[in-house]
Length: 442
Image (cartoon, rainbow, N blue to C red; front, side, top):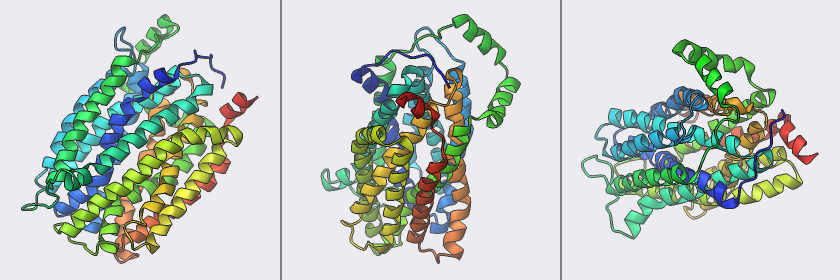
């Protein structure tokens, strides 16, 4: 699909427009690392964890295409198109992050997870479209890589916060009267503050160009007004998806089943298999929760480094080959956790997961951006998120039953199943058509 060339942006312009993802990943990393721990501390059974986690992907399913559609049809002379949503989402997400660790009962934690994930999605979805808006096709892989770099950096620091509070600041890591440990509470307070400040960095230091034909934009926006029209456009997009998007959707399905399995079941797997505890009120279980934070920091750190290496590898091979290779490495790394009994050795498979994570956050979006119409970039990026959240919803519904009835509540076997799904996703990448990359290399 031919699109008009955009002006090349400098390194620092791309830096500023991507920096908000540092804060967004603070939110996601604290959520991914600590939600199972919080639920278990408040009394959740291991085979109910995946169901309780459904609040997160369901909100993404509802929020992202709506926010994408709205941001495509927004323009303000001062705030632009995407930045109003960055700001609103950051305020709401920060509030939710202060509420989450103060949940006193399980239902409250589930409700706040819904609020937090919805708010994060309000900020995050327009960031993906932001790259397509502002960067020429030749810079888009680099733009998504810069986002991945900040995602990795934010993930490292946020995942390590409970351990930092425990080991260096002497904060209690033990639940008192069934309450969430202070280490987790303080981590979320820091995260909420960082989230808001980092997103505001992008809001204040990045600019957006007005639509090239403002009259045409206003006419299209007027035609798209109304709830009925919006619903029709959002649902109708399913039947108008570019072929590349359909092919990527299948890859995304198996990728995100694997990631959901990892986020939900790593803490109980490591607590049981390495720290020899299944009691969420025990100090050993909470110590395992901190160690999972270190593991997740490892994969976040690796992804930050790999983010800048993968585009270079893609130039000499292809984006498809890079994604295949990275997903295969990540999948086999997840499977290997089954055989590891030393907590230090658990950091090794996280290197492989970090390589996969860097590609997951970069290559599919770079491939997709070149296949989308410019005037619907936000909408289609939001719609593409369906293929991030639908597999998580499916996994949330079925993984608990699989764990209970087939795996005898040995949650590490769910990690192995997730690894197999990730390897399969890598193989399916071979069937994706990347027409935009072909045009760039000609």
